[in-house]
Image 1 (cartoon, rainbow, N blue to C red):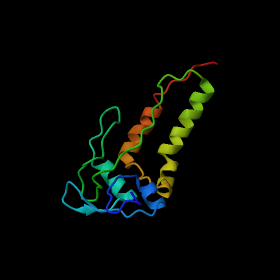
Image 2: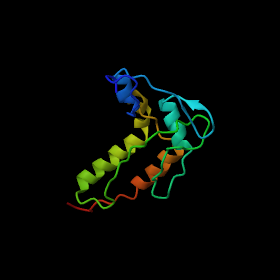
Image 3: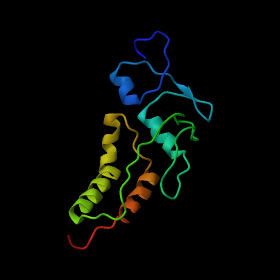
Length: 134
């Protein structure tokens, strides 16, 4: 995009910033023009309808501060872990990512999850099963 005059494209915020690309504010569902920021991504997630399995789409989510074309990142894990040590390590890592690790998200241009979504995800961590003995 950078080498083509007049080109329009879509890349994530981190890549756009790292490449020195210009980016545009986009009109959201509430009629406000929003720049792509980590705050606007979090606002989009807060305005999305979250399903019971925690899937959601932040695209065109409601909210005055929501960026309208924000995408989410998923972590998918098997509910029944086959190795106790690896399962416990996975649970510890997910607990960190969804807890204290959220404060680091903006440093890599990710919007932290809204607290309500993070809390729901933390409850799902508790459902991961590990074998009693290896």
